[in-house]
Length: 149
Image (cartoon, helix red, strand yellow):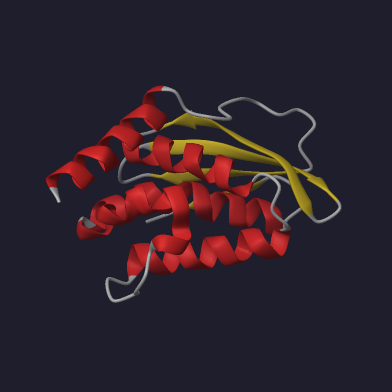
C-alpha cells in the first residue's frame, strides 16, 4: 500500500511541477473562471470544440498541488472526447470524490491518483475545482465564473 501511495504522490507532484496544457487559449470557444476561496485556488479553463468533440482544452491559474495536478490530469483526459463523454467523466469523477462507497475507481484511469483526497473533505474542493469549471465552460458559450465553497 505504501508503494501505491508513493506512486500517487509522485504523479500528483509531477503534474503540479510540470502541468500539462497550462496555457492561454485565445481561440477558445468556451471558458470559465474557477475560484476556491477556502484554499486560494483560482484558474481559468479554456475549451475549443470541433463540433461536439473537445479539440483542445487548457488552463491557467494558481493553486495548491492537488488543484494544479487535477487540472493537468483533466486536460489530458478530456482532449478528444465528445461533450457527452466529458460529462460522463465529470459525473464519475465527482461521484468518486464525494462518495466513499462509490465502488470501482479503475475506470477513472490516471485520475484514480486523486481518489485518496476524498479522505480529506476540505481538499476535495481543490481536486474538483477544475472539473466544476470545465463543466460550467461546456454549458455556456461565454465567460462564466464558478466558486466552490
